[in-house]
Amino acid sequence: MENLIFSILGNVTQIIENYSYVIIFLLMAVESSFIPFPSELVMIPAGYLVTKGKLSFTYALLSGILGSIIGALVNYHLARTIGFKFLYKYGKFFFISPSKLDKIEKFFLKHGSISTFSGRLIPGVRQYISLPAGLANMSHNKFIFFTFLGSSIWVAILMIVGVICGNNEVLIKTNLRLITLSTIALMLVLISIYVIYHRRKDKLTKVI
Image (cartoon, rainbow, N blue to C red; front, side, top):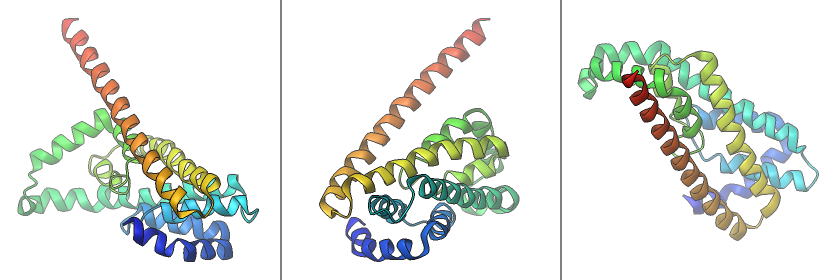
């Protein structure tokens, strides 16, 4: 995957330079919807172009975040309007029973916030976390808010990599691996704290 990313990184940089913030928005919207591809291909070149004075860091950041939210909303609404009804009716053919759907809904009603936020920061998960949120009828405003938080951090991280590393493939590979692993480790710590907090809270509730 890394070799593929860097083989087309230069071409994407040129496209972003030519079409500016509009293409950043569109590519990130596609990346976050049902046609996922690495967001590294978009936001790292954007960060590099900031150092060249071709883009504004603020506008590129906002374009990436807004695109991520719009793309995520596509998946969310598809799952909410079509997916739930479809799976409730035909899920048995995919080994998804109505009871499992009910469990998903209950889980996201209780833990949707941390799941949506942390999911946006984990590669390979970030594009798909919108689907269970939609299936579970997670609050629309809550979904947008936590998608915004997670997307903001991820987009900013990738842009900073582009600013620091420029167009240096070796530096990007090294730093991107380190940042990705660090982000996943941080998410695991936050999720662990969240789980411990809720377990203690549930115990106190039972005692009272």
